[in-house]
Structure formats: C-alpha cells, structure tokens
Image (cartoon, rainbow, N blue to C red):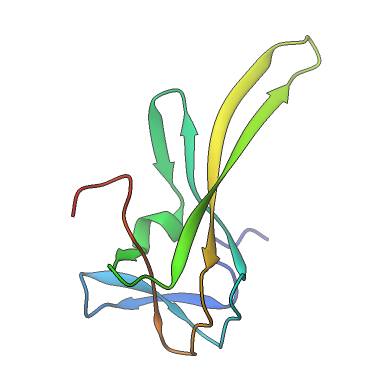
Length: 106
C-alpha cells in the first residue's frame, strides 16, 4: 500500500506558514525520509515531503541531490534528478521539520 509520507512524519498546522511536516517520533541525525523533489527536464515536481516542508534559516533537514540516469530496454537514456530529505541534526518528537529553501524565494 502506498503511503505519501514515511510513518515517522505527519502534516499539521505550522507556526511558520500554513501546514508543515512534523516528526511523530525522535529522528536521529542522518535519517533519510525519502524523496521530496523530482526534476524532469526543466520541471520540478514536489512530493508531499517537498510540498509541506517549510523554510527556516536554522533548518533541521537538507535536500540531498541524487542524479539519476535510467536506460530502457531499447537503449534510450532518461536523465532526471531527485532529492531526498535527510535530517541534518537530531529532531525531537513533535518538532517541525524544516529546510533552507533553495528552489523558491522566501
């Protein structure tokens, strides 16, 4: 069954802006929460992780870029990029997850 968020994260009202991502339990530094953005061509797509994470100058998570090259059975290559959301420090249960925006103006 597909889950749009990892089981350790939930969406709740944010004191920063609108809705945000919150840790349901303590998360250790370096926890990979999964894909938050995907770029195909010039278009960036956000997953629920990317769509609900708010900006903070002192963020507790980072987007880590993974360049992907896929080749189909006919030898055609498809280049795309994806970013995973990874905690940059220990995050307490109930704490909002944040990143320093790099794709958008704040």
